[in-house]
Length: 301
Image (cartoon, rainbow, N blue to C red):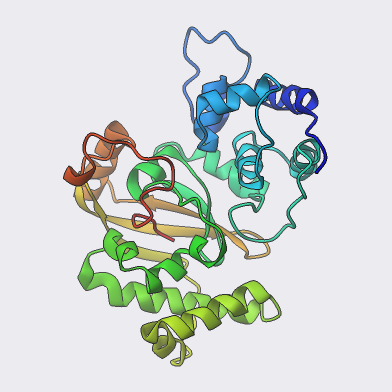
């Protein structure tokens, strides 16, 4: 394995950090800011890394960053495609294809819109419901994206194979969401008929979940564009929200955002959510904070 060019990697990270304005990623500018762009700890927060780890990278030290870390930094620093590839080359990691999964590069148009959605939960997912990037309110509402690869990165996969994943919705709503997920995946599978990622996902789900297999055989097809959801939050209880989707031009990524009509209880709960932030106030988790991705059940695709 080639040695990482730590000094060049550090210089590149700092140069990209310096050019980003806090307001462009939903952060307050603040009167005492001494750096032209983001602080190191802010980049670490956006990438889901520890501040100490990121600081070591910018100091030209530390171990070779993983593919997952590089992908998270590319999203946090709003790198374009050429810049992302350059980051991977500096770290001597193979550049991921422009495909799906946690290492996929978020399409710039969707990322730009996400940056402007600072008062409502929003996130970018793939067409097989793998979370790529979230704004802070989406993390507060849904929990952080799980740090997993393979089929488990898909919320649809976890929905039909992991009972804990369903805790985000009331039990009486589960049949509706199952139908919606399967009808949506039918459309995706037809469009990506030659894609082994999707065909393997469908085959695995048919093998592992009788519920999925039965719904698949109905051949219902409907891309999910809007939906009304009741989301179970550990501190705020059940929050009724409308979920909207904006598709990328090729249909392989989606920007999801959640809203509630003014004056409703859901709107009031969203305002309170912005105050609570990402603190998990559920009794079983009080007093401890897990790493990003630990709470794998509270994820919505």
